Image (tube, rainbow over all chains, first blue to last red; front, side):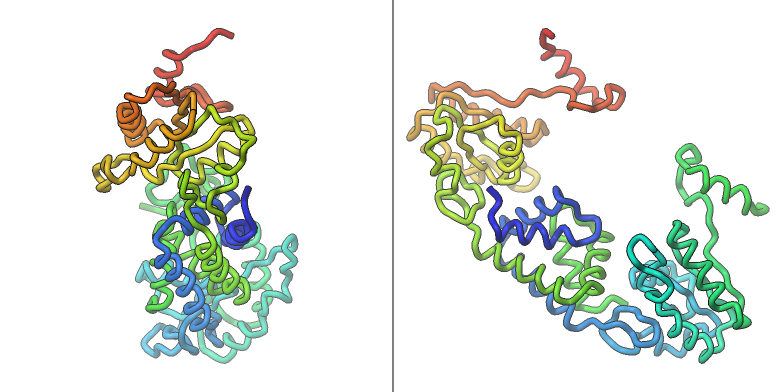
Length: 197
Length: 197
């Protein structure tokens, strides 16, 4: 009963992260049933944003300008570089207002299953940046998942001949969560890294 | 740090159902970082679908043709009309292959909070359809929510001078669910409508 054009829209929506078959169908039908003007606006804003954004040639962050506002901001802390997976993580960390150094966006994590090996990470650029600047510390702000862990360790090894302090975000029980629902590995880590009150 | 064009895209995505602030940001950044061609395809498929879909003048279902394939299918059961909230519900019911009658899509449910009163339901069209055809039964396939319940009862009252059997989908414990997590009202209904094995 689904016709080609609706199926095509559904398929394109399904390519977005976190959007499954059912949600894609729901969104597609909503797009068709809402005010036509609004759907046109959505389509146009996609093209406009895609056309005006580019990756910063220094840190890879998606931005309208190159270099991005962070890379060209001289007031930031020159001793700190934070390695993240995606531009989203930059926004996330910026929202804490706790970090004032520079960033480097990897764009991906090591994942042999998805064909992402060390080559795909493009670490030469990161090394050149680290050698060019005088950071005192590199902070890995990467998810503590299997892919995240192997990426952190691979990069740490890759940078081992550069004398620089490598750190990573603390792992533990998230603020506001319930002990009862904390996973075993998280609890193990939290115990291992317990700190004085 | 967010610039106007990304904000605009995020805002437009946030208008979609079930998409909150965070998901909209995630989707927007994904759209910018994926292959440009794919994002263009998404934008184009929105416009193409919006341009080619219309509401069936008989049953209101969103479709590429008017009348829709269901309304113009003479092999369907002429004695049954199923009233649903949205086109999505039509697809959902069709996927069960259990129902072979016709449909009527309301498009909305009574919701005084959202300014949707009896007038906005446009029931004259439904009444005209029911008077024109010779349905023997009208099935209300509408969510058993507050809005759903009041809509069902309002329409039932509105159609009371037409001699026709009005039914609604059974309510009870969903298949495969756990008794423990079944809500009190659901359990009450399931007890009330228990049936012999």
